Image (cartoon, rainbow, N blue to C red):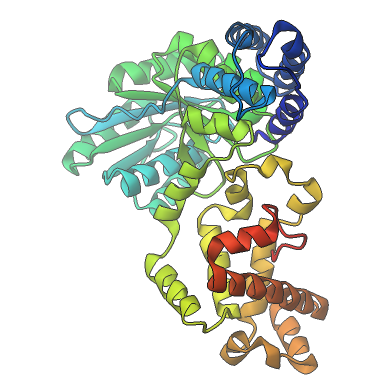
Length: 452
């Protein structure tokens, strides 16, 4: 989401040169570039002006300690101001009420509202251990009701049925009664969206709010609409007592401006980021972590949390023991590692959270393609167990059989085996000298030919 902004800011701050302190003169050009970077990222102009003034006020005259360059010192100031702009800390859902707690979802059509309902239900079930009931009050799009029903089954949430002939308020009250009878902890109510903000839409959602008195009213907005996302959020905020915002589609080619504008324009906190299409792709919004990612510092805390949730600890222990005993790294291990990375949001999602990735050339990053995982796994699945354990026995006829079985070409099989051999060498280095030795060997960079 923030790639363009990250690259632009990285170049700007890296080029800053100065003496022992930051002065008006040596940060003038840098701040002009920061301003342009933010505007290109579609951050609202009033937000940019205020942000730049705050950075200038804090930066001018700031001493640069010996261990820092002026650019690094300015990055510190910019990061602190970004965190202030986006809300200091993560604001969790307020669910400490007599069950069932009601969450009302609002937003325009196409913002990803219905999918977000399912993502939130899964989040609450898995991470908060809550029982969840969902319902759809979107009587104008019958497919939305069926879509939510399907998603509810996928995430294991209870579903209260509704019909286009019903009044939305009747549906919502029925869902609340059903939740009480089923002793559900949380009710999530999906509402109708429009292509634009209109009076009828606002009247309907205001009636729903009055009938339900929700503890949380979340506005779901497509981050790819940039500055318009903040303006639309403001229109809803004026009509409804919003408690927070969910930014969706942040894994797309978005410019990032919405994340930096929404809080300032609406005064409402961003509570979640939608980071993919799958129902597990919802992250709590941590301003300090997002600021670090924007400035190319990575987000190691989120990476660790994701690993804690996603990695099969028994398999990881089994793999570590195998490596310690020197039994070698085979294609079954390779397949397991790919599956683990996919469960953590894919390699692109992982790299986004690693420090310094903004400095890695695009030519190297472009080799990292999540879609390639499926093809590689199909090739490995087409092998026999013996071939997976002993890749050295894979000769010409075997390669042709594997390619035919996986719907690929022999060249693809050859490429996989070559990449696997590189990965095998890396794993041997890890087994002999640990991660530190491996990283020294890589020189702190991605290898020229990643095994993906």
